[in-house]
Image 1 (cartoon, rainbow, N blue to C red):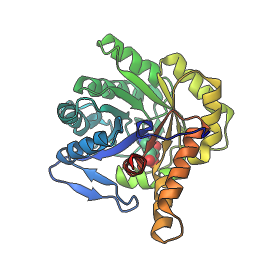
Image 2 (cartoon, protein in one colour):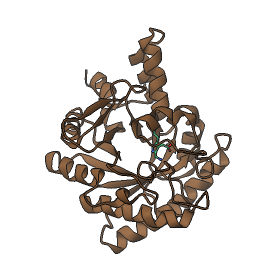
Image 3 (cartoon, protein in one colour):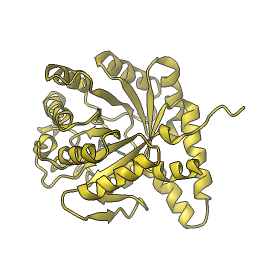
Length: 304
Ligand code: PBG
């Protein structure tokens, strides 16, 4: 009579890819997570696939950063090169790419800055080029996480014009300005050098606004919509699931992962039990897919 059953197929595993060879740098605030060079990413991708997890999402840490995020759409960039290597080695693994500028800008913001402010429309141009470069390299799904207005429509348009009509857009639609992203910014080396992300990410106090954001993204052509973070936003996941007839993804973010890891290391929580309870709750709330750093661990448990 159990209503919610987790399977490895529910998960997407996030991977941080860095230039170089034989690199596997531990991320101190995220135990068991690493920045990996492409050869290592290929090994991890094989492992992920063999565990029954259908998909990964790639985050790139580029070899250079500038004001214009030009490494974001470099054909020979770290993500573009990684996609090809993964597709060669594990062709049936679904490769998703995070489309954002914060990892590629020298100032760490998700957009282009003019006169000290984010220039929304100038940013759209770069995001579209970035998404296109990922599609050209062989990505199956692009996932814009920048929260600029109009980016889903812009990305859909350039992909269609260039013949990539089958590429899916997974939009980070309801993405909150959250302190739970702290450990990720260490992992992706993407903390903003000044200010914060409140001018483009959502206020955690807002519930109805999430539905407006999701409605806009669907209108612009999103195929899957995402709520992020997950654990403190189960009401939003449930609202989105019950309001729209579209697949819903939820991002069990870095801080949610690190909290459990830290408490477990101190012996204060049972890591496996808490992990499964959290993932089940996210699915119960309405998520069809869960992006989680726990994916491999949870899949191993589920396989047994
Ligand atoms: C890029 C991006 C972030 C995360 C995913 N994509 C960071 C941010 O918006 O600051 C966070 C993921 C996590 O915390 O696990 N914009």
